Image (cartoon, rainbow, N blue to C red; front, side):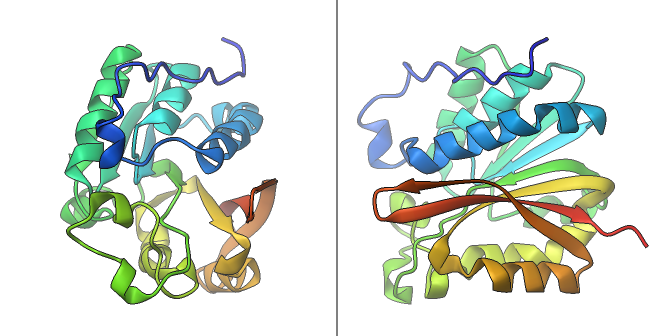
Length: 218
């Protein structure tokens, strides 16, 4: 199997779906490209469980699953019920088996995934906004509105990383410049996780980066 991620078929998604589900954009494709560059490494760690938080259309996890094959279990979560439905359809359309859960981060099954996740992918709502723009009644707003520094959701996830990741687990995170990369590295270092930039790209007014985190073995 080649170390290449093919862009999944999304022809089943309608324009009305995109009224409630984040449409793949430059950030989505940067994450796909970054993961493709990591395929030899990911295969080398022999993952058994991959998880994507905030799957949206399902394009990223479906692409990764098609590349890695059936030797791994794939799970996705999304707080947006519309996104969870579309992710299921994307997986089915592309003949990929995913377990899709409609929930906030990993709360409902945190106790069941203690130190189990080998690959974690997160393209969070990273746009800095006023708190008022984070509207729980607007599924599409939840996909991009990130509150102060665009960090409201990702800051809730960081403390969970040491709990859910396996000893050789790897965490991939997409951010923009305004999220304060240096501070994210500092926060993760406090949990004994080392971060690096594996890919970056300017997209319009946004400067996007994909960060990779690994546990510092003592």
